[in-house]
Image (tube, rainbow, N blue to C red; front, side, top):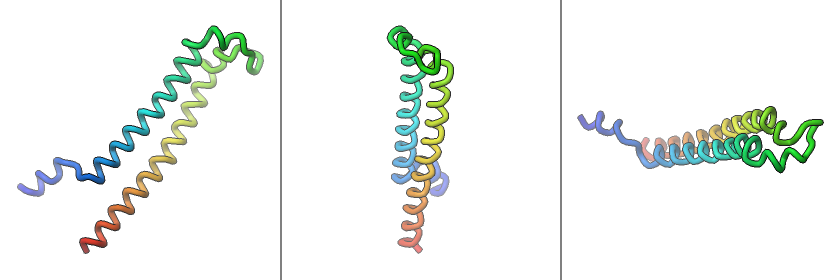
Length: 100
């Protein structure tokens, strides 16, 4: 009975890991929303006056820029999560050495 109860809750390391993960996801999604929604819709009128590759900047952001930003955010997420996973694994290894 004790083992099943232990699996129901997260320990401190797991809680910190998921809080960092959710914070990173929230930041990246906010950036994407600002670029996609803001650049393509909210700030379209002032950005229409700026020419970029022969089209207005707001049009380019809506059609190409938001996609490129999304790809960069995916790459950023993968790199940051790889780093976070390594940190978490190192903490687990240190804990295992202390126990064993």
